[in-house]
Image (cartoon, rainbow, N blue to C red):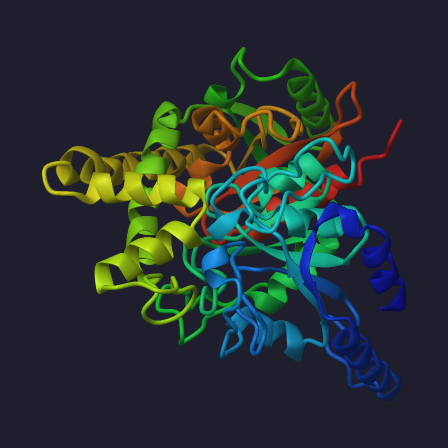
Length: 452
């Protein structure tokens, strides 16, 4: 624990953490040492875990990377926090993020940009950039992130770590500050697939506090890491391997596919014909949900309240104008527009219909294959500021990840080599709903491929 705290202090300039629990972490480490000596410690005893600052911890601030919640203290623990504590993990601090998890670069935080430890002139991805950096830079063993459209998998790819988004409903969202409630899912960053499997098992399972959490039993994910892919059918969506894909990324993935084929898996090209509509559907539906969810931050109940206001409308207007950043305002306005009278049917309802078509594409594909192999990101980590003034280009950073959230499916990104600049490349594996075992199994084999 002392070593991790010293490393955090040394690498403080990366801006991975918004808050570090120095004294509490050391006291917790001592108590877990005692339980280890008695043989009564939990399954994550001593594992040091960072937490994205959009997940509630009792008596700790939960800022969501926003000025509007800068001083808000949570009155309760999220379900995942209680489960990690019960398993004897050590929660070391809260990590930086794009404000309210809206972004793909962790440049939108009210508390500064997070730097990619591989190349500090570049972004770490987002919105869970702080959690990805915490693992990549050796500041924590694992970290919790959230994934609404790729916010675990994309930063995992850009920072060269493992990042898994479980099936929607596999992990409780109770205590997760909502961005888009039908998309959000808590998941795990780690250095290895086996660590991801261990943490995921602990945080998964039904929660009566979350009506969308599934009542299905939770498998032993670590036991699914058999070291073999023999007999598995791996699908390659042709829409994900177009000429637009960076050639170095394509070559890296093809190298892993050759290895999987030699290891006994079979490869099959499949089609997800509505892929071209994923970004449009995603940004219509998630902004609509964001507009609704963020209406609660009005200066009346909690969070920032503007000073010296003269009436209620002024309080609403100034509290929200001062408290929210540009990207959050942009998405609230877009979401309010698509939900407004005269546009609801043209945009929101049509978006929901497209979401169903995308889900059906995956259902058909999974009749032919056991999981899908794709790139995680269309590029490696880009320069800080490079896409800041072009929201559409930034949104396209998630082109390979948003479909899993639209369909509610599990996905994992694992390191897949580097480009000529030494920047990490991510390989994404998508699976059937509630079949995290298969994607973890394939990821584990890829991770353990003997290096030449």
